[in-house]
Amino acid sequence: MPATVTRFAPSPTGRLHLGHAYAAKVAHDQARRDSGRFLLRFEDIDHTRVKSEFYEAIEEDLRWLGFEWDGPALRQSERTAAYSAALEDLRRLGVAYPCFCTRREIEEEVARMVSAPHGPEGALYPGTCRRLSENERNTRLAAGQQPAWRLDAPKAAAITGELSFTDSRHGRIAVNPGLLGDVVLARKDIGTSYHLAVVVDDAFQQVTLVTRGEDLLPSTHVHRILQALLRFPEPLYLHHELVTDEKGVRLAKRHDALSIRSLREAGASPADVVARLA
Ligand code: GLU
Image (cartoon, rainbow, N blue to C red; front, top):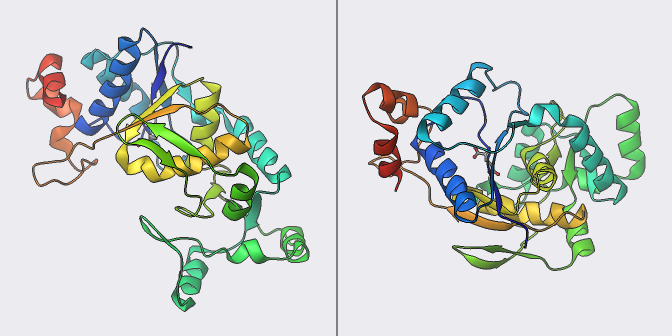
């Protein structure tokens, strides 16, 4: 059995708050318990939201909390060639198609449908561009229309057959390819997506145990499909609970008082903060 490799994967779009610290602690403790490796990865593909000062601020907060990571942090913004290669593989398999729809067109199409497919967070992409003929696709591409690329979920499922994944809190879960449907694999503006980048990098970094908040459980259905298509190993999962404020609202950037920096400035010690996470 290879040693446990976990990762903490924040986006450098703000300072760490207690929710991030909890996610970091789960990944850190799992790796240390098994004498494994704890990696840091910056999920910074969306350059419109990233701010350069947060790379260092996040590293500083992690060190202050005592969560030392192994090796240099990986930046997804430096990995675009790997994401393009994976997208190319998926296109060759015939499971990625160009989507020319605008957000508005998708909303209008969903509104017209009698029973539009829905996922955990609302309407799913209705598959409009999946039904374009090869000819229509080529005409639009030749006209210089820049597409997003989407997963052909039904076709992918036909290729992979039934899949499942194991989560240490939730047990063995059967993959439902329709849960998130034809997700975007590559956005028009950034050439990749959360789903594609995470799957490519978890394989590249040889992550054996993916720990993250349970809000991302639906995404894991997509990730297992991509892993199977790209012939990547299947990691184990631990989708942990989310940290909420006293009203039960999930922590976000607006909870500035619960940022690690604010707690520290208010006089808390790393031990106080870590004790609060436990
Ligand atoms: N960047 C994601 C987040 O901050 C983590 C995604 C993941 O762990 O797969 O929630």
